[in-house]
Each structure stands twice: as structure tokens, then as C-alpha cells.
Image (cartoon, rainbow, N blue to C red):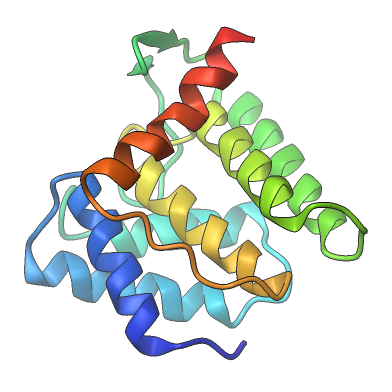
Amino acid sequence: MIYDKKQIKEFLKQSNLIEEVSAEYAHEDALKAWEYISEKEVLTVNDVLHVHKLLMNRLNPRIAGKLRDCDVWIGGQKKKFVSTEVLKDQLKNVLSGIDSTLTADYDKNEMTKNCHKMFENVHPFEDGNGRVGRIIYNWHRLKLGLLIHVIHVGQEQLEYYKWFKRQNEI
């Protein structure tokens, strides 16, 4: 996959900052995760788990590369833990949806955004979902011939959060 390395570094830096992760090693790990995923033609659950492991291994090794086994709160809503098998199935459905868009004719910007919201709604990890999700989102965008979407901390971040607020109101 061909991409602008400067844009990728800026995207990863801002993605980390959205989550208040500013350590230099976290940026290095995010770059490794990007380099790993950028080689993939399609994504599997194992690929997503590996991206999470690369991102989280130094930040929180206890959860790195593992599906959550607890309830989590996102956007003021509780996501109940049922089983890792259910999370795995939900993740497979999201990845299948992404895969099906790679050859479809539609509004690509809206489709990548919707797939990203689906991933975030699954919330498969105890922590790191946003960072993993934005990496998948931009991988998807590049696969469809779109540019990297850098979401800067501040106003762009607030607009980004509105994607999910609207989803929860439906």
C-alpha cells in the first residue's frame, strides 16, 4: 500500500493524543502497528488482535492483544461483556462488512465512517479501541483510494465524537 509517511505519522500522533497517550514509545508502537496492517489486503480477527498487541504491549501488557473479559463504558453507555466468542463474532461481522465495501460502488467517505462506527460499537478491547479503530479506519480509506483522515485534537476531535453521539441517538 502506498501512503504518505508524514501524514501517517501525524495521524498516529493525533490519534494517540486524542486518548491522552503522549509517550514517545507509544508513537513508535503505533507506527509498528500501522506498518503491520498496511501490508494486509484484507483483515482478520487475528490481524486486529495483533494491531492491539503492538499498540498496547508497553502501555498495558495485561490486556495487549486480548479481547476484553469485562464490561466497559463508552459514551456514557455500558457495553456488557457476554463472551469472547460473541466479541469475536461481532468483530468478524465488522471485518466482513469492511471487506464487502472494497469492491462496492457507494459514497466511500460515508462507508468508511460507518464501518469505523461499527467497530467502535463492538468495543472489543478493555482499552485501546479508539486507537485500533482509527488505524483500521485509515487502512480502509487507503484501500478505497481515499486520503488519510487526520483527526486533530480539539475541534476536529469534538466533531469526530459527534459521529458516535448521532449513532447512539438512533
